[in-house]
Image (cartoon, rainbow, N blue to C red; front, side):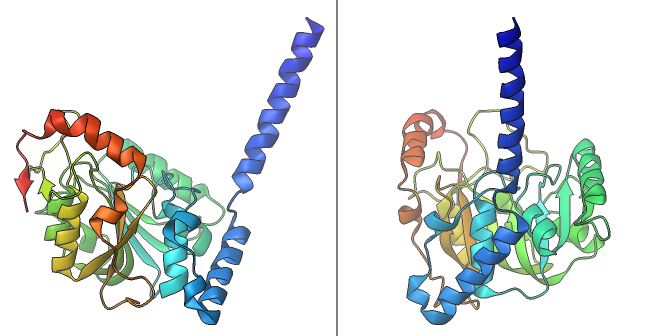
Length: 289
């Protein structure tokens, strides 16, 4: 019994130490050094810059968007350090949080769940890096009809550095309607159950909620075609293909050139998702764009 109790104590201590070490990964200091290293590589020889699959990491993002965004803005620089995120959840895990907390960005976060917004406001209000000037967190159900009004009412308009969109629904129609801000970089989630050569989205429904598994959002090709119409180019995705990064065409095209949709969807996860899920949803009511 004593041995068993001792083992439990040791296990708890080790778990606590491990969690403490993990929490130090990609600390503010480490990220500053990474940023400076990217700038050094850029100034010495841009050909030495790493690729997207070498720079990703997670601090507050769901996957490796934090590392990719740090890399992008190290290369292209930033203007006003303003970021807008639609469907930010509680803001503790979202694409803008790392930039807000560790790099002093001004954030405008939006979510339709009042509990998420309340939790997020408390988090940033009590965080030692944001309590003096927390991000503006707004509770609102976003539609194509109100997207511009909601963002402007929060105090944001014109050119910003980053726009993040992850609605699992009307993503295509929301970005299509958006015109009150002109982000330099856009990161959005796409639906990789749809084959790379199909530009499809769900029909617009202001009250859209997922009712059928895997019937939501828009394909990477659909979002890329929309991006092109708006003056943006696809520069890459994270390792699983569905979170995509677009940069405005007037921003550093020589350093971060356009890539093809097909090249972004060659990973095993995406191929497996298409093989498993597409036959089940291919005959549903998709809109070709």
